[in-house]
Structures are given as structure tokens and as C-alpha cells.
Image 1 (cartoon, rainbow, N blue to C red):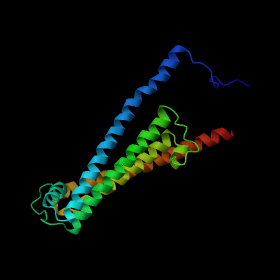
Image 2 (cartoon, rainbow, N blue to C red):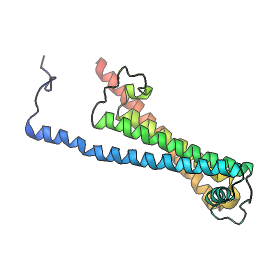
Image 3 (cartoon, one colour):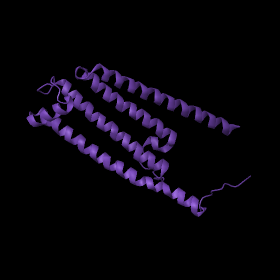
Image 4 (cartoon, helix red, strand yellow):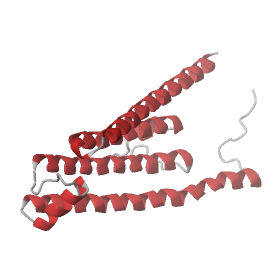
Length: 202
């Protein structure tokens, strides 16, 4: 039986060690995504503050959320309606889902491609992180993108009168493409897993 080439504690030769160390070049990218997360948190609280202000009759807050929600449409309401509240809340949910996507990319990507975080046994360790790999991360990202696309599509349908039919059709087609892509990714990963398991048994 041949011994494994890389046993624990074995030193790599200079060139492989340098190439392997290049994975740390991804660290500034993940730190940049953390800054992007901060921007989304700020945006979330600004929108929430304006919504609460509009509820309590602040005219400036009401004008801001209507202008952002309806993009200057002539049919935009001049008061806080159920549709306005629904669209603003969907926008807040959209921010949360994108923030969740960022967390998956930051934590899962760092764990998979840069370095282990050694979170085993930590009470706050995400359940999905215990078995994360490139394939699992790719599938979860695809599902998160579908969720974000669903929110955007729902916002468009609620406010359909302010959109051209071509826009509605295009967003629907794009959403269906996301769904088919996620199904193809999941199916490919399933085939790869089954093939890998069969090769281990033979």
C-alpha cells in the first residue's frame, strides 16, 4: 500500500507552497463583501426608518418611499396604501435575502477556498456549513438567487400597471431560466455524487 503524498505536518516544496498560499489573495475579496454587507444594513435601516416615518405622517418620508417604489410614475399614490407598504416590505425582504446570499458566499467561500474556521462545536455554527463544499455552496447560491428573483418578480407583478408587457415577460423568462439552471446544477451534483459513491464501492 502506498503512503499518502501529503501526510499531516509534511512540508510542501517551495513552488507548490507558493501556489497554495496564493489562496489568501481571496481574503481582500471576502473583506470587500463584508463592507458591501454594511452598505446593505445601512440601506435597510434607511428604508425602514422612512416606512415608519410615513406611518406616523412624516411627509418627507412618505415622498421618499413613494418616489423610490414607483420611480416617479404618474399613477403613484399620494398617501400610504396597502400596496405601498407591501412593496416597501418586499424591498426590505429583498435586502435581507441578498444579505443572506452575501453571508453564504463570505463564510462558505472562505471555508471552502481559503482556510478552515474550526467552528466545529460552536453553538452558532450554521447547519449547512458542517457539510459545505464547492458543489453544496453552488446549489445553495442558486437557490438563494431564485428566492431573490422571486421577490423581484412579485414586486413587478404587484405594480404591473407601471411596467411594459415586455418587462413582465422578460422577468418571467429570466426567473424560469434561474429555476432551470438550479435544477440542472442539482441534477449534475446528484449524478456526480452517485458516480463518486459507486467508484468507492468498486
